[in-house]
Length: 154
Image 1 (cartoon, helix red, strand yellow):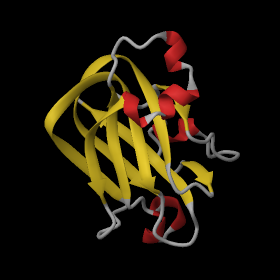
Image 2: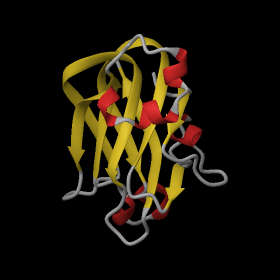
Image 3: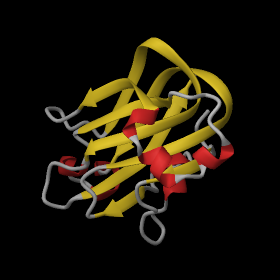
Image 4: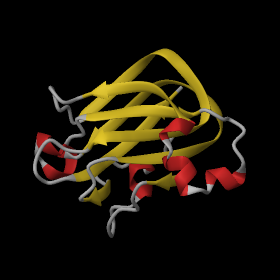
């Protein structure tokens, strides 16, 4: 349900050919990449409320070949206010504010550094506005947010 979702905002637009929309295009060969970023976020609008039961991310190793490019720590979040105003949803400061989001699931991928992280939620979450929060982008010295896919499933 997230392929082609509208992007509300992000912590960084990404470089040429590595823009935010690449995280939602359904193509694992493309990616959203923000060079030099140790943390980040990507907020999306699904168009209507869905109940999310499962979510999946494809990490940086997919394109760069090194598990050190996989995101060690990240989370799925849902916007606390399902009736947020259009003004709020266009405000980068509002979208970046962690206090406006509820953490659904935190992933600690620091030990395994999996390229593909596929999680079924113990408690499904319903929401229209969701966010991928990246707490630690890489475990190697090439710091950057690298997300090939951010996928949500009913």
